[in-house]
Image 1 (cartoon, rainbow, N blue to C red):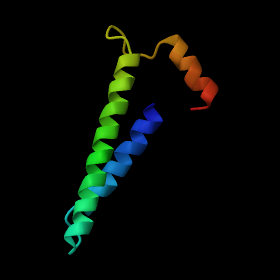
Image 2 (spheres, rainbow, N blue to C red):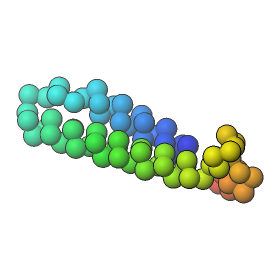
Image 3 (cartoon, rainbow, N blue to C red):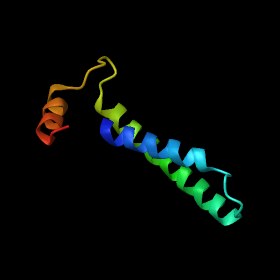
Image 4 (cartoon, rainbow, N blue to C red):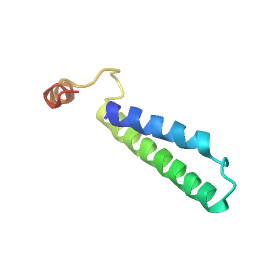
Length: 73
């Protein structure tokens, strides 16, 4: 989840830098839509990650940590 979150943040930053740079309104509109889509996706992944973490702990639960280790992340 954290890997997905960092990828989404990088893509969002990339598209944010391109907003309004083109002379074409269509290109600018497409870039704005992609930027917004990455913002929404990042927020959704962050929400899922927050739901996995108990509010009383700042560390991942053991079950989640072992699943992440098995997946190779």
